[in-house]
Length: 420
Image (cartoon, rainbow, N blue to C red; front, side, top):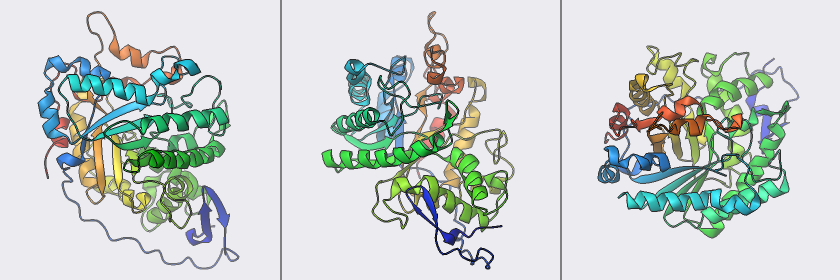
């Protein structure tokens, strides 16, 4: 039996029945927004961010031209973990050295010494381990949660410190945090702790604004996880339709299902109440790294069925609920440099699919690849072979650059920097 969307009001992420005495009454008509008019979706210089880390800076002498980056991009982007430590769990006396402010300051100093000069800076702070198996944290606690007082205060303090960084224009609080809603740690669901994350995020937002109200702040979530996991689960749970994947839904049910899923997991981060008033975000950060072997791509970055791809991204603006969108990380995953041309094909498709969305800025996942072997060392292994499996990046991270490890531009660089 289908439960009507209008029969649910959502405060935070709790769904409460309201006015549903007659579940068999006819469904009200659903007004679906008109189909967008699509363009090539090219981004202006001001909308383009370039992600730079220590590994990128190491190969600046191999052909990367700082002056060209300064010309092609309007924003420097730093992707930083909440704690950058090989163990993932520094002691309190070590924390300041491995947290975002110290890491950002060091990277900025090095970037400027290489000739990079950007007036605007964005920092994406990852709260989850690279393996997406738990939370990065300071020791103790051994098993952190967002309702654990020490962890909450430590996270809050780290963002307070970061807010004082000179030139900082944007902070993305967490990356792919909606995956935490679907995560199980030690066999226990983290759904209840996702509620605690929502309240912590709001505290972080308020704390940053107190220190510097000019900084734009927003939560980071993963679009593929939203469509692949959240939409089917929430709509099936509340009887909107029987489905096995979000892409099997057609309008008006897709529109209805996306709204219901957004009410459950995304909108509580953006607004204080279910009526979408009193914003607690300046933008919604959406990681765009799709699951390649599933619909709508099914292995191809540009499927013949383009309509399915456009439908997959059709309601990004609806999920953002009137706020601008930031794309803090974009990539088409490859396990080697052999299929790197697929990155440019995917980005071309993505830009068109999002051409109806207000995008503040967008950045590719990395500037350059992490070398596999360099003079007997293994830089890639430092990311993919840690002692703690939860801290391992997958191999595709090492091939995520717009530039290969020799400093040669890939086609995706040209696609991203094509002017409107």
